[in-house]
Length: 203
Image (cartoon, rainbow, N blue to C red; front, side, top):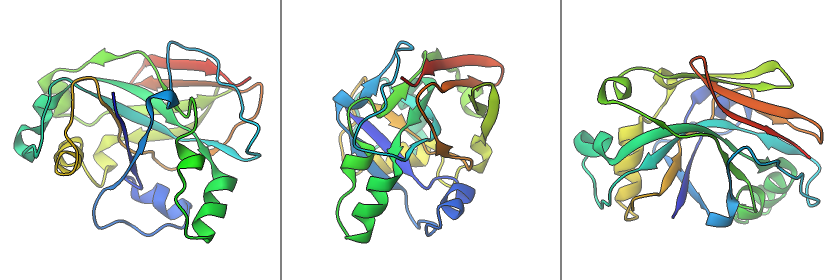
């Protein structure tokens, strides 16, 4: 199982971090040890003092494919959920300043939290999806897939031009504006429309 992530896929999020708007999808990966599911607690790592949440829609790949055409890409995922791409922002900034890779800031153990999977129909795939993240009961992020710079189909086609996609792979599709820090004791919950798919604690 591979975990793919898309960076800077909402223009306003790129702007809030003072990043350039990308001319093609920004892709990075996390190892399978990054996955945390089933509402398990997340334990704040001791190597960062500035851990940020980034709430995203996550796709589940349902069949194998390579060099997938964009027009067929929607048939390659069958379920979605909401997830958190945790980022050690202080480590990321340090690595960026030195021109070094920043996997240690993005791909550490349990940095890819996912909620309950929800099957998605062809009709639902064709419509904008609305989601939000609450921290301690207060909404901190609102997302609308109509604002994506690169659609799910474009992402799947692009990733598959470099990597074979296999059944069970997952894709984090990017986060909207509103990212911010968490601390021990925080509770994060995320909903797709009015359905809660993700809820866990920071310990």
